Length: 43
Image (cartoon, rainbow, N blue to C red; front, side, top):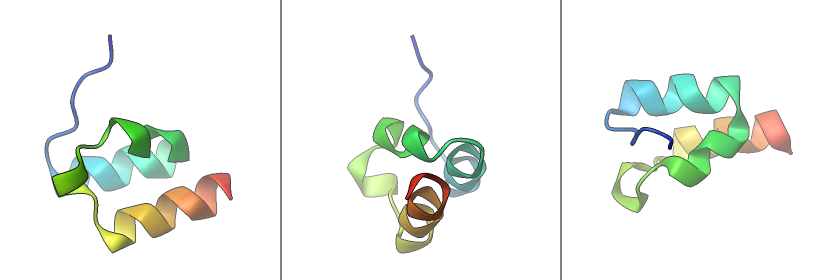
């Protein structure tokens, strides 16, 4: 089972490594920057 992502810094690290990690980020933790990074990683 995947761990929950809990901080903004970890969100950015995770989505930079794998844009699909954004699906594991709770809605209230998603930021425009994190979403942009995810899209740039996975198109």
